[in-house]
Amino acid sequence: MRMLLRIVGVLVVLSLIAGAYFAWSLNHVAALPTGPVTSVAAARILLKPIPDGPNAAQLRQGQYLARLGDCLSCHLRADGDAFAGGLGLNTPFGVIYSSNISSDPEHGIGHWTPDQFYRAMHDGVDAQGQHLYPAFPYPWFRNLSREDDDALLAYLKTTPPVAYQPPGNELFFPMNVRASVALWNVISLPPQPGAQTPQGASPEWIRGEAIVLGPGHCSQCHTPRNPFGADTRGKAFQGGLLDNFVSPDLTGNERTGLGRWSIDDITEYLHTGRNTRAAAGGPMGDVVTYSTSMMTDEDRHAIAVYLKSLPASADADSTAADPASIKRGAAVFSDACTACHLENAVGQPTLFPPLGNNAVAQQNDPTGVLHIILAGVRVGPSPTRPSPLTMPSFAWKLTDQQIADVSTYIRNSWGNRASPVTAADVAKLRSKLQLDEARLTDNSGDH
View 1 (cartoon, rainbow, N blue to C red):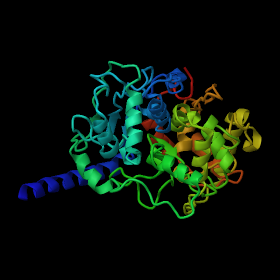
View 2: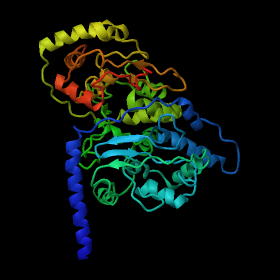
View 3: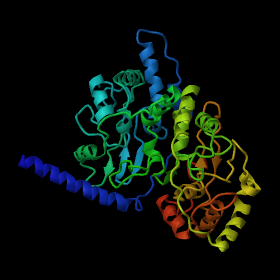
View 4: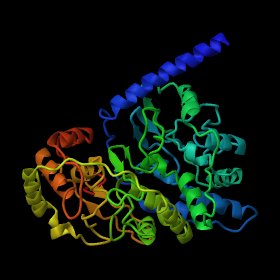
């Protein structure tokens, strides 16, 4: 018993150190250099017809679950093979490389048993008994049924084997000690999967909840994190920070969330990656390409129904912007932005989004809009919209002060209201994105 207490005490200390480091590193983590954009051809494996056979129904179920779970977004590195992993996931604790989940028996999961796969999906423990880091979304995947897990494994074992070993993780102490994840599970992992369904909920709402809280794992990106890297309680779907991108508020907030969006707006966005209000770029562009664009119309609609039921987050107060900054920003906007977004920022719907009453522009954290201006952004292609529209990087053209001014102008014009941006904010993000020196950026399609 005394030894057990000592072990628990050590883990607590390690977790406290990790929490302190997490708080520090939110402002000190550098972005990973991005490689060439991977062709959407890799996504075709998720649409490849499965021939009739003894277990065809199970394999088709597993293939569809791979779409719902957005498996390719993480388990596909630039110019890599489908499900081979090796994508560097930039976290406040360091870099975690996604694993190989192809059918390869040595480097992938070709030899995994259904029990081993279920334990990984449900408890976050791999076939060798090692704890998986919760960058792998087992806190959400554990809401899947055993039947679903078995179907997903059966499908993954039909994918082409890839003899590729992803790099080792580059994590800081103490998170490089996998045993520390055991304590994280005790503190942060929900004790029972699933959620309480409200009385009288429609079947469509129930289906939407099952996807969003299960394989879709939407809150992993769209909920702020506490110092231990878990969802902040009471802040579900109120927006989060991911690898120097902001995942917007998904609640009914009319300024920063989906309050002004209709169910059809959300459904179209999930289907094509664009609608009359917005376009999906950055990490969400990959979600559209490798997941939501390949869902059924019924499931996209169910997700929209569920998201529209989320109560609005509290509206945050914002400091008034400096009139001089607004004036300077208007001049920059007229020179650099109106070619696509037009005067008065009305945009060209489904091509270049309007900026008035724009939720992304008004997020409480300006990191997202600054990232887009500095590094550019690429709208995720989909089967119905195969052209990956891009916005170029302006890091080479605009100074920190000019970007701060135009961001402040955009965030406080045409019905928008948000806190002003400073040149120091821009400089900090420019450094994280490694854009202090002019270079081509991959995600905006510059090369």
